[in-house]
Image (tube, one colour):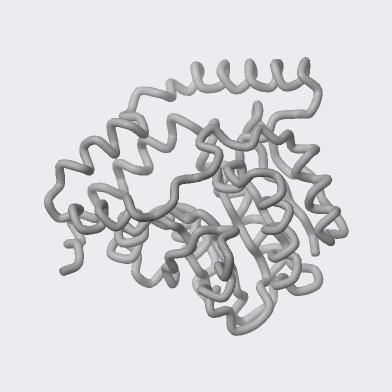
Length: 252
């Protein structure tokens, strides 16, 4: 039995609030990603967009609101988050359960043509370096010429002194905005485990492999850029940054 709309709406709203603890200017970062996708797909009748590590569809919903004619695939390994998105915003995307980088993960998407834009927020800092290198090559192979990979994440500058300053800028921004007052990741999941309607989805979640690097791969923005160029992207660079939160764009 599926989830009720009221339950999904409540838990997606809570997800949105707790995620705001972890990203400086999260909404602006989403807007910038949508700006890039809109620019790259201008004039196309039905662009194909893949949202990698979509969670309950936070970014997919925003892109769908901006580009209602786009075909969006929301890809995540978490069955609970996918079901929340599928119930809360069924028309925003096609929700697909797959672990990014796992053998055969692209086949699970059942792509019907070249991808115009692959987007992601806070998902591509998890794979270890060799796996991430392979992921970037796989994405380059399915993106059309001129298509883009747009990654919004916490990617520090390579220089340690600049990385420290960027982190300080981010903390100051958070303090000025009053961020951090909502529930955190751990408490969201702790409360979710008390919801009877989530029991089967949480049981399925426990069967899925956890990220190999729970704390992330620690790669700088420059290291990501080098891997993307190595994978075949012709232009790579940051189009937006606040502290260590940035939007990195790679053009196929």
